[in-house]
Length: 121
Image (tube, rainbow, N blue to C red; front, top):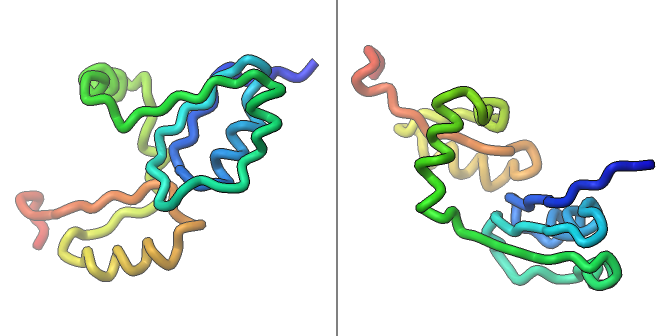
């Protein structure tokens, strides 16, 4: 018997990712929309929502949760480094932003870094 998740989090915010989240969630599960959509979500498989009796929740980052999240990261209980697929020097931000716009399929999370005060430029 296949195990299906009770909660699925869509942190991307596209129609495709939200549809995939609806498909992945188990019966009476919850789909949490965290990713900020750039446009209205369309073409969603509403039959999944209805027949699986799914609940949809959403949030924008809930500032009250940041201390708990930072504590989990600090204690090594939440691994975020594997999510970072690209790092950019803040001084090259315009170039990096152009790359990010053109390469959306390759990027999970990008980080801008500055080397000032670290012995760099």
